[in-house]
Image 1 (cartoon, rainbow, N blue to C red):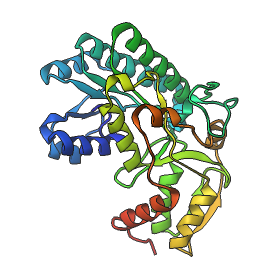
Image 2 (cartoon, rainbow, N blue to C red; image 1 turned 90 degrees about the vertical axis):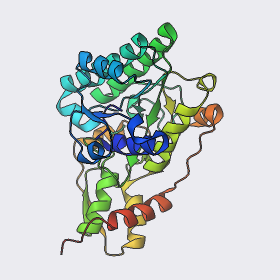
Image 3 (cartoon, rainbow, N blue to C red; image 1 turned 120 degrees about the horizontal axis):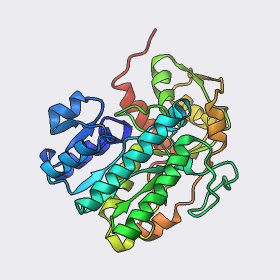
Image 4 (cartoon, rainbow, N blue to C red; image 1 turned 30 degrees about the vertical axis):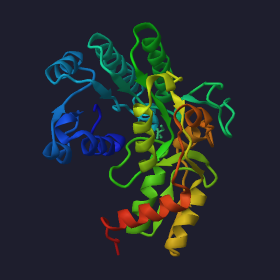
Amino acid sequence: MIGASGQVGTELTAELRARYGTEKVIATDITPNPNLREKGPFFILDVLNRAQLYEIVTAHNVKVIYHLAAVLSASGEKKPKFAWKLNMEGLLNVLDVAKDHKLDKVFWPSSIAVFGPTTPRNNTPQDSVMDPNTVYGISKLAGERWCQWYFDNHGVDVRSLRYPGLIGYKSLPGGGTTDYAVEIFYKSLEEHKYTCFLKPDSYLPMMYMPDAIRATLELMDAPAEQVKIRSSYNLGGISFSPKEIAAEIQKHQPDFKIEYKPDFRQAIADSWPKSIDDSRAMQDWNWKNQYGLKEMVADMLTQIGKKVKPVS
Ligand code: SER
Protein backbone atom coordinates (compact mmCIF):
# COMPACT_ATOMS: atom_id res chain seq x y z
CA MET A 1 0.00 0.00 0.00
CA ILE A 2 1.55 3.30 -1.07
CA GLY A 3 -0.02 6.34 0.57
CA ALA A 4 -1.29 4.22 3.48
CA SER A 5 -1.60 7.18 5.86
CA GLY A 6 -4.05 9.06 3.64
CA GLN A 7 -7.83 9.21 3.60
CA VAL A 8 -8.38 6.07 1.52
CA GLY A 9 -5.12 4.32 2.44
CA THR A 10 -5.92 4.21 6.14
CA GLU A 11 -9.22 2.43 5.55
CA LEU A 12 -8.06 0.20 2.71
CA THR A 13 -5.01 -0.99 4.68
CA ALA A 14 -7.20 -1.92 7.65
CA GLU A 15 -9.63 -3.76 5.39
CA LEU A 16 -6.91 -5.67 3.53
CA ARG A 17 -5.21 -6.62 6.81
CA ALA A 18 -8.51 -7.94 8.15
CA ARG A 19 -8.91 -9.99 5.00
CA TYR A 20 -5.42 -11.35 4.35
CA GLY A 21 -3.67 -11.05 7.72
CA THR A 22 -1.74 -8.11 9.14
CA GLU A 23 1.71 -9.36 8.14
CA LYS A 24 0.64 -9.75 4.53
CA VAL A 25 -0.07 -6.07 3.98
CA ILE A 26 2.88 -3.69 3.94
CA ALA A 27 1.81 -0.13 4.62
CA THR A 28 4.04 2.65 3.26
CA ASP A 29 3.80 6.43 3.28
CA ILE A 30 6.04 9.48 3.55
CA THR A 31 4.19 10.34 6.75
CA PRO A 32 4.50 7.99 9.72
CA ASN A 33 1.22 6.63 10.98
CA PRO A 34 1.44 5.30 14.56
CA ASN A 35 -1.78 3.38 14.13
CA LEU A 36 -0.65 1.45 11.07
CA ARG A 37 2.88 1.03 12.37
CA GLU A 38 1.80 -0.51 15.66
CA LYS A 39 -0.59 -2.82 13.93
CA GLY A 40 1.67 -4.28 11.23
CA PRO A 41 4.53 -3.78 8.78
CA PHE A 42 5.07 -0.11 7.94
CA PHE A 43 7.85 1.59 5.98
CA ILE A 44 8.54 5.20 5.19
CA LEU A 45 8.53 5.32 1.39
CA ASP A 46 8.55 8.24 -1.00
CA VAL A 47 7.16 6.77 -4.20
CA LEU A 48 9.50 9.08 -6.14
CA ASN A 49 12.38 7.08 -4.69
CA ARG A 50 12.44 4.42 -7.35
CA ALA A 51 15.32 2.41 -5.88
CA GLN A 52 13.60 2.14 -2.51
CA LEU A 53 10.33 1.12 -4.13
CA TYR A 54 12.12 -1.68 -6.03
CA GLU A 55 13.91 -2.71 -2.84
CA ILE A 56 10.69 -3.10 -0.83
CA VAL A 57 9.02 -5.04 -3.64
CA THR A 58 12.00 -7.42 -3.92
CA ALA A 59 12.65 -7.83 -0.20
CA HIS A 60 9.04 -8.65 0.63
CA ASN A 61 8.08 -10.47 -2.54
CA VAL A 62 5.23 -8.01 -3.14
CA LYS A 63 2.56 -9.29 -5.53
CA VAL A 64 -0.04 -6.53 -5.56
CA ILE A 65 0.35 -2.75 -5.19
CA TYR A 66 -2.34 -0.26 -4.22
CA HIS A 67 -0.87 3.10 -5.17
CA LEU A 68 -2.82 5.93 -3.56
CA ALA A 69 -0.21 8.64 -3.00
CA ALA A 70 -1.21 11.84 -4.82
CA VAL A 71 -1.59 15.60 -4.48
CA LEU A 72 -5.33 16.39 -4.78
CA SER A 73 -7.13 19.09 -6.73
CA ALA A 74 -6.99 22.14 -4.47
CA SER A 75 -3.43 21.55 -3.21
CA GLY A 76 -2.32 20.80 -6.76
CA GLU A 77 -3.32 24.26 -7.95
CA LYS A 78 -1.00 25.75 -5.32
CA LYS A 79 1.94 23.49 -6.14
CA PRO A 80 1.38 22.58 -9.79
CA LYS A 81 4.86 21.34 -10.67
CA PHE A 82 5.15 19.23 -7.56
CA ALA A 83 1.65 17.78 -8.08
CA TRP A 84 2.57 16.81 -11.63
CA LYS A 85 5.86 15.27 -10.51
CA LEU A 86 4.42 13.22 -7.67
CA ASN A 87 1.26 12.15 -9.47
CA MET A 88 3.01 11.20 -12.73
CA GLU A 89 6.46 9.95 -11.78
CA GLY A 90 4.98 8.10 -8.81
CA LEU A 91 2.57 6.21 -11.06
CA LEU A 92 5.26 5.48 -13.66
CA ASN A 93 7.55 4.07 -10.96
CA VAL A 94 4.74 1.79 -9.80
CA LEU A 95 3.85 0.65 -13.32
CA ASP A 96 7.53 -0.02 -14.06
CA VAL A 97 8.05 -2.10 -10.95
CA ALA A 98 4.85 -4.01 -11.78
CA LYS A 99 6.20 -4.73 -15.27
CA ASP A 100 9.76 -5.58 -14.17
CA HIS A 101 8.71 -7.82 -11.28
CA LYS A 102 5.67 -9.26 -13.03
CA LEU A 103 3.31 -8.30 -10.22
CA ASP A 104 -0.13 -9.88 -10.17
CA LYS A 105 -2.12 -6.62 -10.00
CA VAL A 106 -1.96 -2.88 -9.47
CA PHE A 107 -4.71 -0.57 -8.21
CA TRP A 108 -4.46 3.15 -8.87
CA PRO A 109 -7.34 5.59 -8.43
CA SER A 110 -8.34 8.14 -10.99
CA SER A 111 -10.98 10.78 -10.26
CA ILE A 112 -14.00 12.71 -11.46
CA ALA A 113 -11.39 15.47 -11.94
CA VAL A 114 -10.49 13.97 -15.34
CA PHE A 115 -13.59 15.72 -16.68
CA GLY A 116 -13.76 19.40 -17.45
CA PRO A 117 -15.95 22.38 -18.29
CA THR A 118 -17.20 21.08 -21.66
CA THR A 119 -17.95 17.55 -20.41
CA PRO A 120 -21.72 16.89 -20.12
CA ARG A 121 -22.29 17.44 -16.42
CA ASN A 122 -25.32 15.29 -15.70
CA ASN A 123 -24.90 11.55 -15.66
CA THR A 124 -21.48 11.95 -17.27
CA PRO A 125 -20.81 8.95 -19.52
CA GLN A 126 -17.77 6.69 -19.30
CA ASP A 127 -16.50 7.96 -22.64
CA SER A 128 -16.95 11.67 -22.89
CA VAL A 129 -15.18 14.94 -23.47
CA MET A 130 -12.19 15.12 -21.16
CA ASP A 131 -10.75 18.59 -20.78
CA PRO A 132 -9.60 18.78 -17.15
CA ASN A 133 -8.39 22.19 -16.08
CA THR A 134 -6.69 21.36 -12.80
CA VAL A 135 -3.18 19.94 -12.60
CA TYR A 136 -4.64 17.09 -10.56
CA GLY A 137 -7.18 16.33 -13.29
CA ILE A 138 -4.57 16.58 -16.04
CA SER A 139 -2.31 14.17 -14.14
CA LYS A 140 -5.17 11.72 -13.57
CA LEU A 141 -6.16 11.77 -17.24
CA ALA A 142 -2.55 11.24 -18.34
CA GLY A 143 -2.28 8.51 -15.69
CA GLU A 144 -5.32 6.72 -17.13
CA ARG A 145 -3.68 6.68 -20.54
CA TRP A 146 -0.44 5.33 -19.03
CA CYS A 147 -2.40 2.54 -17.29
CA GLN A 148 -3.99 1.59 -20.59
CA TRP A 149 -0.56 1.70 -22.28
CA TYR A 150 1.12 -0.56 -19.70
CA PHE A 151 -1.79 -2.98 -19.97
CA ASP A 152 -1.66 -3.03 -23.80
CA ASN A 153 2.10 -3.09 -24.21
CA HIS A 154 3.37 -4.92 -21.13
CA GLY A 155 0.36 -6.88 -19.89
CA VAL A 156 0.35 -5.12 -16.51
CA ASP A 157 -2.97 -6.00 -14.82
CA VAL A 158 -3.73 -2.49 -13.67
CA ARG A 159 -7.21 -1.60 -12.47
CA SER A 160 -8.65 1.81 -11.71
CA LEU A 161 -11.73 3.70 -10.55
CA ARG A 162 -12.61 7.33 -11.06
CA TYR A 163 -13.40 8.03 -7.41
CA PRO A 164 -15.99 10.69 -6.68
CA GLY A 165 -15.57 12.82 -3.51
CA LEU A 166 -15.07 10.36 -0.66
CA ILE A 167 -16.68 10.77 2.74
CA GLY A 168 -15.55 8.83 5.78
CA TYR A 169 -15.10 9.19 9.53
CA LYS A 170 -11.96 7.15 10.12
CA SER A 171 -9.52 9.48 8.38
CA LEU A 172 -9.48 13.02 7.04
CA PRO A 173 -9.19 14.08 3.42
CA GLY A 174 -6.51 16.60 2.51
CA GLY A 175 -6.36 19.22 -0.19
CA GLY A 176 -9.44 18.28 -2.21
CA THR A 177 -12.41 20.26 -3.50
CA THR A 178 -14.89 17.75 -2.10
CA ASP A 179 -13.40 17.96 1.43
CA TYR A 180 -16.24 20.22 2.58
CA ALA A 181 -18.51 17.17 2.75
CA VAL A 182 -16.32 15.75 5.54
CA GLU A 183 -15.49 19.01 7.35
CA ILE A 184 -19.18 19.85 7.64
CA PHE A 185 -19.74 16.92 10.03
CA TYR A 186 -16.94 17.88 12.43
CA LYS A 187 -18.06 21.53 12.45
CA SER A 188 -21.71 20.62 12.91
CA LEU A 189 -20.91 18.50 15.95
CA GLU A 190 -18.27 20.79 17.43
CA GLU A 191 -19.63 24.26 16.67
CA HIS A 192 -23.13 23.76 15.26
CA LYS A 193 -22.15 25.93 12.31
CA TYR A 194 -20.07 25.66 9.18
CA THR A 195 -18.76 28.08 6.59
CA CYS A 196 -18.73 26.28 3.27
CA PHE A 197 -16.16 27.12 0.58
CA LEU A 198 -18.60 26.15 -2.18
CA LYS A 199 -21.92 27.73 -3.17
CA PRO A 200 -25.18 26.19 -1.88
CA ASP A 201 -26.14 24.63 -5.22
CA SER A 202 -22.81 23.09 -6.19
CA TYR A 203 -23.75 19.50 -6.98
CA LEU A 204 -20.88 17.02 -7.01
CA PRO A 205 -20.64 13.24 -7.20
CA MET A 206 -19.77 11.80 -3.78
CA MET A 207 -19.56 8.39 -2.13
CA TYR A 208 -19.54 7.02 1.38
CA MET A 209 -16.26 5.32 2.23
CA PRO A 210 -17.65 1.81 2.89
CA ASP A 211 -18.99 1.82 -0.68
CA ALA A 212 -15.67 3.11 -2.06
CA ILE A 213 -13.65 0.46 -0.23
CA ARG A 214 -16.06 -2.24 -1.37
CA ALA A 215 -15.90 -0.98 -4.99
CA THR A 216 -12.10 -1.12 -4.85
CA LEU A 217 -12.04 -4.67 -3.50
CA GLU A 218 -14.74 -5.87 -5.89
CA LEU A 219 -12.83 -4.49 -8.86
CA MET A 220 -9.62 -6.10 -7.61
CA ASP A 221 -11.39 -9.43 -7.04
CA ALA A 222 -13.03 -9.51 -10.48
CA PRO A 223 -11.61 -12.04 -12.95
CA ALA A 224 -9.23 -10.23 -15.34
CA GLU A 225 -11.43 -10.84 -18.37
CA GLN A 226 -14.32 -9.02 -16.69
CA VAL A 227 -12.23 -5.90 -16.27
CA LYS A 228 -12.83 -4.56 -19.73
CA ILE A 229 -11.83 -0.97 -19.08
CA ARG A 230 -8.13 -0.53 -18.43
CA SER A 231 -8.02 3.23 -18.27
CA SER A 232 -10.44 3.81 -15.37
CA TYR A 233 -14.07 3.04 -14.55
CA ASN A 234 -16.66 5.73 -13.86
CA LEU A 235 -17.98 5.23 -10.34
CA GLY A 236 -21.11 7.01 -9.20
CA GLY A 237 -22.47 7.21 -5.71
CA ILE A 238 -24.58 9.99 -4.28
CA SER A 239 -24.96 13.42 -5.84
CA PHE A 240 -25.82 16.31 -3.57
CA SER A 241 -25.14 19.99 -2.98
CA PRO A 242 -23.94 21.74 0.20
CA LYS A 243 -27.50 22.96 0.74
CA GLU A 244 -28.86 19.42 0.59
CA ILE A 245 -26.33 17.87 2.92
CA ALA A 246 -26.84 20.75 5.38
CA ALA A 247 -30.61 20.15 5.30
CA GLU A 248 -30.05 16.46 6.00
CA ILE A 249 -27.79 17.30 8.96
CA GLN A 250 -30.45 19.73 10.24
CA LYS A 251 -32.91 16.85 10.47
CA HIS A 252 -30.64 15.48 13.24
CA GLN A 253 -29.45 18.85 14.57
CA PRO A 254 -32.09 21.54 14.09
CA ASP A 255 -29.77 24.30 15.37
CA PHE A 256 -27.05 23.62 12.77
CA LYS A 257 -26.32 26.66 10.60
CA ILE A 258 -24.44 26.91 7.35
CA GLU A 259 -23.11 29.95 5.55
CA TYR A 260 -21.30 30.19 2.24
CA LYS A 261 -18.02 31.86 1.35
CA PRO A 262 -16.95 30.39 -1.98
CA ASP A 263 -13.21 30.53 -2.69
CA PHE A 264 -10.98 29.35 -5.56
CA ARG A 265 -12.32 25.82 -5.15
CA GLN A 266 -15.69 26.95 -6.54
CA ALA A 267 -14.23 27.18 -10.06
CA ILE A 268 -12.86 23.65 -9.72
CA ALA A 269 -16.26 22.33 -8.57
CA ASP A 270 -17.97 24.15 -11.44
CA SER A 271 -15.77 22.33 -13.95
CA TRP A 272 -16.64 18.85 -12.66
CA PRO A 273 -19.64 16.59 -13.29
CA LYS A 274 -22.70 16.78 -11.07
CA SER A 275 -23.47 13.09 -11.38
CA ILE A 276 -21.83 10.06 -12.96
CA ASP A 277 -23.07 7.23 -15.17
CA ASP A 278 -21.40 4.10 -13.82
CA SER A 279 -23.33 1.55 -15.87
CA ARG A 280 -20.10 0.01 -17.25
CA ALA A 281 -18.99 -0.89 -13.72
CA MET A 282 -22.44 -2.35 -13.11
CA GLN A 283 -22.28 -4.43 -16.30
CA ASP A 284 -18.69 -5.60 -16.09
CA TRP A 285 -18.27 -6.49 -12.41
CA ASN A 286 -21.72 -6.05 -10.88
CA TRP A 287 -21.11 -2.77 -9.11
CA LYS A 288 -23.93 -1.34 -7.02
CA ASN A 289 -23.76 1.64 -4.68
CA GLN A 290 -25.51 1.14 -1.33
CA TYR A 291 -25.42 4.24 0.87
CA GLY A 292 -27.69 7.16 0.00
CA LEU A 293 -27.42 10.67 1.45
CA LYS A 294 -29.76 9.89 4.35
CA GLU A 295 -27.94 6.73 5.49
CA MET A 296 -24.52 8.32 5.03
CA VAL A 297 -25.38 11.43 7.08
CA ALA A 298 -26.94 9.41 9.91
CA ASP A 299 -23.90 7.13 10.13
CA MET A 300 -21.35 9.96 9.90
CA LEU A 301 -23.04 11.89 12.71
CA THR A 302 -23.17 8.81 14.93
CA GLN A 303 -19.56 7.83 14.32
CA ILE A 304 -18.02 11.31 14.52
CA GLY A 305 -20.24 12.06 17.51
CA LYS A 306 -18.35 9.34 19.39
CA LYS A 307 -15.01 11.11 18.96
CA VAL A 308 -15.65 14.89 19.08
CA LYS A 309 -16.97 17.11 21.83
CA PRO A 310 -19.07 20.21 21.28
CA VAL A 311 -17.09 23.44 21.78
CA SER A 312 -19.29 25.54 24.03
N1 SER B 1 -11.79 14.38 -3.87
C1 SER B 1 -10.92 14.81 -4.93
C2 SER B 1 -10.67 16.26 -4.85
O1 SER B 1 -11.54 16.97 -4.41
C3 SER B 1 -11.53 14.49 -6.26
O2 SER B 1 -11.00 13.31 -6.73
O3 SER B 1 -9.64 16.70 -5.24
